[in-house]
Length: 189
Image (cartoon, rainbow, N blue to C red; front, side, top):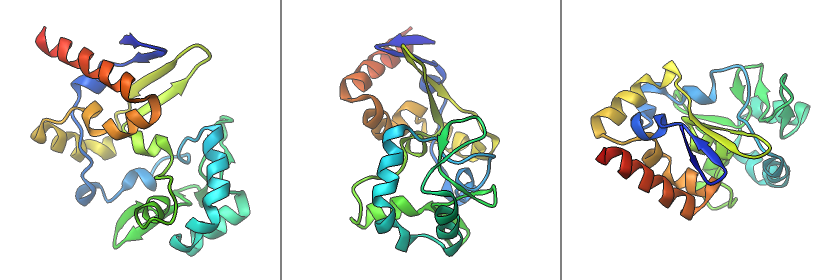
């Protein structure tokens, strides 16, 4: 672990390798697990605002879940998250054949909305835990991503490089530049 500004960062994000392999996992992170995607307060407002534009991209089951539960929910632990369909799939998930994709991201890719998706999804396999004085930046090892770890190792792409855009989105260009310096220093040791 090392400190970078107001973050405590796990060295795993520099040392572990990762590249999503949708052809292998079929987007399992959008349909497996026991909670929706983590959200922050600002994102709940964004979801409320963009839902009418995203709705045409969603499945019937997702629309029903959102209209019954809301565009976001408080999870069992009190954290803000996306609603689920029957306690399984994220309500915003759509399918391209057997591969799970994000309906919000599809709307974004088609220029309908200007918000890509929740930052927690964009950052995965990094998870952020906000505390009063700092944020913890950790690598989340999940067996459904074993193929992504293998592909990352094969392509020699560390986690932090795979999620560069998302890290910049969350912490800014300067923070990411500092992270790259730390990574280079560790590499040179």
